[in-house]
Image 1 (cartoon, rainbow, N blue to C red):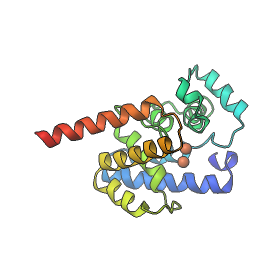
Image 2 (image 1 turned 45 degrees about the vertical axis):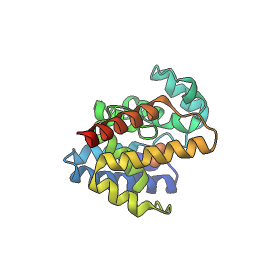
Image 3 (image 1 turned 90 degrees about the horizontal axis):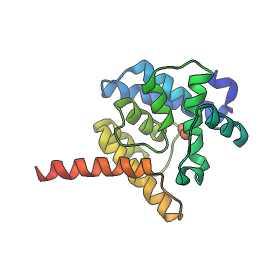
Image 4 (image 1 turned 120 degrees about the vertical axis):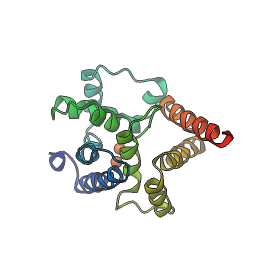
Length: 185
Ligand SMILES: [Fe+2]
Ligand SMILES: [Fe+2]
């Protein structure tokens, strides 16, 4: 079904994310099948027109924060979770949350959520300059990989004077506090 609603490029990305998610799930003792499903569906609404996305937000009864309203690039994650639930009958909360928070992250992410958050950045077709290092970090330690991506996202947003969604800040605070506490033990 992903093939029917996505362009070839986006479908290839989704397949690659699903594969990367499976691999990360295996390394991190997480459900491989759930990782594949969440990976395949994470961007399922990315190419829907804005009106359709708004409709899905309504169906899901989702109230966006001001920062989220100002960042339409985030909407597809939330609407993809609604779409997966309403149109594809996915009921597993962990899969739905992994889809919903794949762009912003959030505090208290499950292993599956972290797997999808990272798999989206290390899929086979990604070619940014330190992608191999991020791939290695993600496989070495899931939290280390998540922290790298959060820092990268926060830096990129502040560099462009863009708002940062509170979920991203909460995710960063949670991990940095954990990391600092571990260092002072
Ligand atoms: Fe996405
Ligand atoms: Fe993606």
